[in-house]
Length: 247
Image (cartoon, rainbow, N blue to C red; front, top):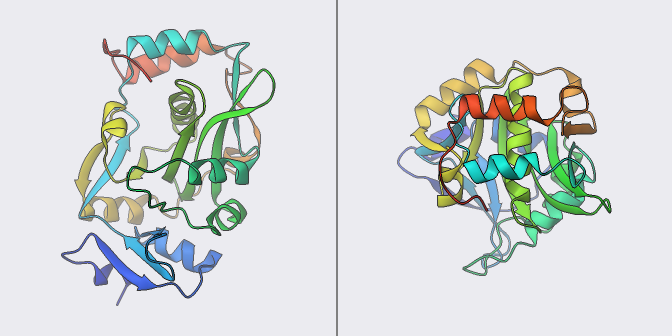
């Protein structure tokens, strides 16, 4: 009996927290399950495996005209880097104020996630080398399971997202798992798919690991080789610009 069998007609399962380690975490993600801490339920973990899974199809990303304009303004102002100051990115995501006051990134999550061999982050750095936005998650083969993103300056979480989409496409990824749909991710092109569909993706792509260079530290935006215009053309080709405010 696999872990996912405990869900069936449920999206979440509450379980006593007996400590997470790398092996347990990898087993969870390989079955489509993700853990959440609850400050209101100390000593417990909430395990998620939603019946409707939020996924980004990397051939159907949405981008606004205002965001295209912002991306063109980024060279000289921002860089997006892979796996740089990893734990700091997770800690920034953990410290985002939540409407209900209940954080879901546990106190030990930054250290644990950043130490995972399949951890990948994309951080946005300004001219002063300050971390001002970013995202992180875990790879299961060529599926990126996104965990969280944050922004200290306008549009920087979206900058990290679009730069990372291009990075994933370059390495043969087709989907990014966003777990739970919300207004923000929906505005970027995220959609819900049945749990069964996501499980089939894991079976197909979960063992197709990308080259190690995928997670090696380095600049991915602006592209040091091709420049920002080529990157923007690719984004526009997969997501027709919409007349919406990007933020």
